[in-house]
Amino acid sequence: MSGPVANNIFRSSGVIAAAAGGLSWQTVVTASTLTASAGNGYWINTTSNACTITLPGSAVAGDQIIFVDYARTWGTNAIIIDSNGLNFQGETDVYTVDYDTSGQAVNLVYSGATIGWTPSSDIVNALEPVAPPTQKGIFAFGNSGSAVSMSNLMNSSGVIASDVTGVGSARSNLGATSYGGDKAIFAFGSTGSYSNITNLVSNSGVVASDTSGVGTVRVSSPATTFGTSGQAIFAYGYASSPTNISNKVSGAGVMATDTAGVGTARYDPAAASYGVGLGIFGFGNASGSGTAITNLVSSSGVISADVAGVGTGREAPAATSYGGDKAIFAYGTTPGVGTQSMSNKVSNTGVVASDTSGVGTVRYLLAASGYGGDKGAFAYGRDGGTRYSIKNLISNTGVVASNTTGVGTARSNLGGAGYSISA
Image (tube, rainbow, N blue to C red; front, top):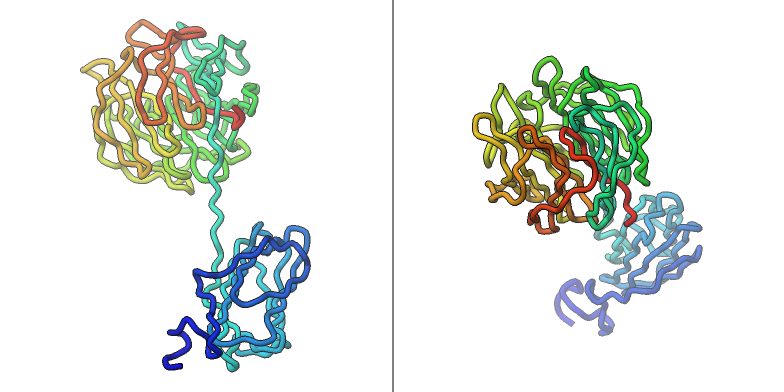
């Protein structure tokens, strides 16, 4: 038969060789030993034990076998290759060959007697888990004419419950975000003077008492999640002047010290997560006027330089994620112009869209939270001297619904965040 073996679909014996796309995948192997055959693919589950794999005692060029770490446990219990008298990458089978990296997949091809079996690919598949989305939300603290510490839970259908007696210092102009995958944190704000206290929220929606604050005392500092391990970050706000400092929150809810700021110092922006492990801060008051600039947050919590704003510049809007990987900013007020109800969507690559005509009552100093895994809600807020308890739900395609009559004490200057991965 003419032509190199590699270019034939036949072995030199005339027997059809299994091509890569025609491998016969076997049932999951959990035993401590396996005798492998050419032309097969094997899922190797070493959850309970290591596995010694004996390769065929005879082979011809082009024979192929694939082994895959089924349960990502090879790092704990490796696979050991016995080349059964044939060479393995040019070495005799007296050498021990093992693969001990979780998530690995090994594609072995027999090249002939001199080199023997050799990996045509040796790939470690990255594990980049995406945390389950929060299903419920909480709105808490705020100003109803004076600072309050009450909270209102929102279920996975977007229904807001009546007031829960507050825990922690009554305060307003604070920020809030999810952390740890299924919990929430409220931080900073004014108790009559600027503070840096925090209140953690459990995955059952219980607000904890005050924790002594870390970082510069300030107000109007929003927050978003980032990364894949439950981290969060608070940034911007007003101390003795507008600031751009930030403070990270660990997956265990521990607030870190100040990080030098990036981007235009401002207060009353809004923030939300988007994409996978990414966040965005947008809008706010800089130098006495509303702005539309945004700052993206990387999966490691690094805030980027300013991105030129799109949409109407304004302060005190709210923001939430929706659709699983997108975000939306809405409402707010533009100094010298008035209160707004428009919205701006954010794509899963962090691109802010132009204004969408507003729906619902114009207001600012409201809060937002995700719910139901892929939807959101804007709630509460004020316009001039009038405070509201209305809400506007956001569909998983980013459509803002008309007003829903509110539940709970009408107020503004509060925070909202998602919690709980159980509906």
